[in-house]
Amino acid sequence: MAIYWQCIFRESYEKIFMLNRKRPDVDIVNNVLEAAKIAYPNSAFIQSLWLQYHERGGLSRKQLEGLYGKASKIKTIPVKWLATIEAEILKKPARFKSAPPTTKPLYSKDERIGKMISSILEKYPGHKRVIFLNGKYNHDEPFTPAEIGELERFYKLLVSK
Image (cartoon, rainbow, N blue to C red; front, side, top):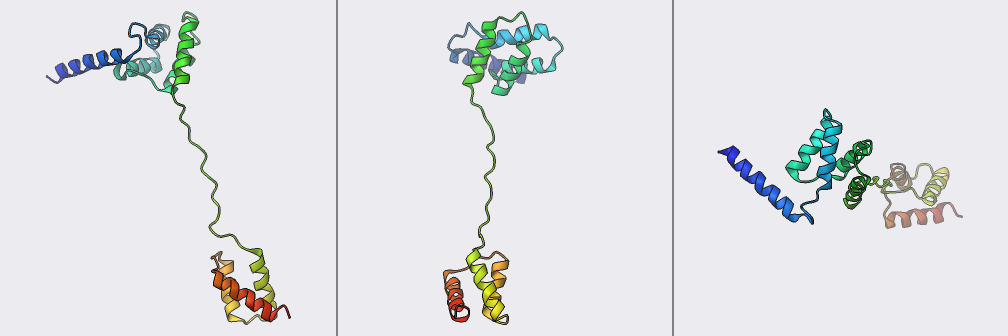
């Protein structure tokens, strides 16, 4: 019973596939596949392409490119068939993976802040708040605007006299 339904489904699928084609009487891909099967009777690649084409009704861009590469070596296939295969390849979308974007750090060190911290710590190495800010600076943690203002105020008071 299951085989019966598979046959009915396959026949209806083939009819639908043929109805959706522009010219169902002309099937160049099938002609090229048949010619390739004759030229390469033991090729597993050609057999799998033929099976894929007849079961699913089409081939992907990569499969068509592989078929074109095999068929271009066969001398008996007309050039216009190869041109048709090439046109089908160009019609299909090319899928490729783009390069991943370069990652940039979330926080970049501000050289001006580093110079202020080092000059304050040269004069006053025991200043606890500046030591805390130096630890934040060394661990690449972002400074809040209040901390930057505080550091600038310490720099003006302690160093730029």
